[in-house]
Image 1 (tube, one colour):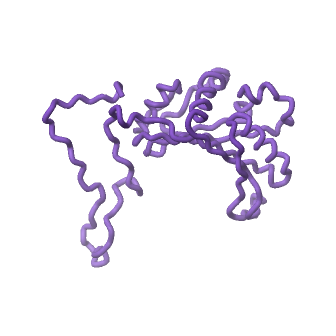
Image 2 (cartoon, rainbow, N blue to C red; image 1 turned 135 degrees about the vertical axis):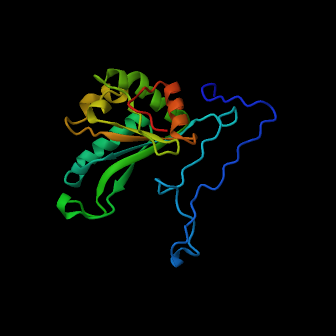
Image 3 (cartoon, rainbow, N blue to C red; image 1 turned 90 degrees about the vertical axis):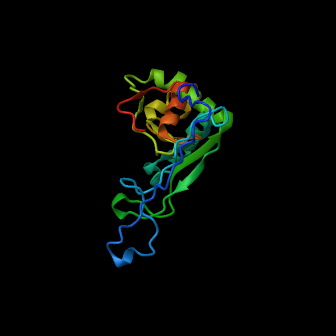
Length: 218
C-alpha cells in the first residue's frame, strides 16, 4: 500500500474514467446499430487499475497447477506419477484432464486422459508460494526470476516448473525413490490475485519474495 500511495489533498475532485470503447466512424451504412468497438491495440477491455487502500490490498486468491503429460496417452503410469507428485507438493487431490479434440499428427484422440490439474486456496496457496521462494528457486542454478512480461493484464501471473524443479520440493525429495526415474513431470503454475493490474500483482509477488527480470509490462 505504501509503494502505490498517491497523495491527494482534501477537496481534490476524483478523476472520472470515460467511455473506453470506440465508436464507429459511420463511413459505411453497415456501421449503424453496431456495438461499440474494442480499444485500439487490444481486442478485449481490460480492468481499470484502482488506487490501493487498506480495504483492497492485493491478495492471493488461488493457485492452479496444471501438468500436461503426453506420454500418458500410451502409458497411464505417467499419469499416476503426475497425480502423486502434484498431490504431494500441494496437499490437494488433483483431477484428471482429458483431451478435447483429436489431432492425428500428434497421436491425440478426443476423450483420452492427458494431464492433471488442481487448485488450492487460502493458506495452502500462500504455503505453496512460500516453498517456491525459499526452498525451490534458490536451488535452481542461474535462475533469473520471473519474466517481467508475464501477466494477463488483469492481475494474474504465471510461471513454469520443469521436472528438475519439481524434484526440489521437500515432499518429493524426501521420498524421491518412490517416483520412477524420468517419469516426474513439469507443471504450469497460475496465480490468481485480487489485483486489478499486472503492476499491482508484481508488487504483491515482490513482497512475497519473487524477483523479476527483463522489461516490466504494465
